[in-house]
Image 1: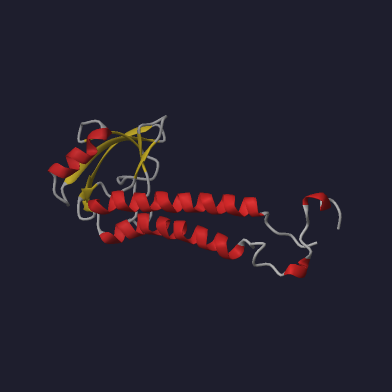
Image 2 (image 1 turned 90 degrees about the horizontal axis):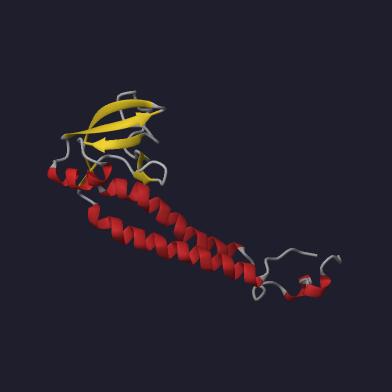
Length: 167
């Protein structure tokens, strides 16, 4: 007996993959207007337990030294203001100006100053474009790789509900 994905499971997968594709498209539409604006140089992560964490740092190809922001640093303040005010702070400064972050790293309190960066197309494509590419690939892969009963040869003897357990 050959294995095949039941049509319900195939459609369920494709519906979820298409939903992710739609969410990815909305994400691109929302983030694209920020290209060219000043930003902190990293992706922000908001969590319920700690308000903001340092996420991916796309421009940094080497391991950071202790005086640089690292992944999962918990941000307590930005230029002496709450982290939620970061966008307003970034709009008042120019790329290259230093921004001071007070944070905790492994239980230690640190103050780190890093320059603002420009959110360019390269960063946009690196962070959001790759996610969108994956969102496009999922429905395509599901459509191509998950066999449809309409595309299978008629002589392979597909199992029916009453055939479970029999070979």
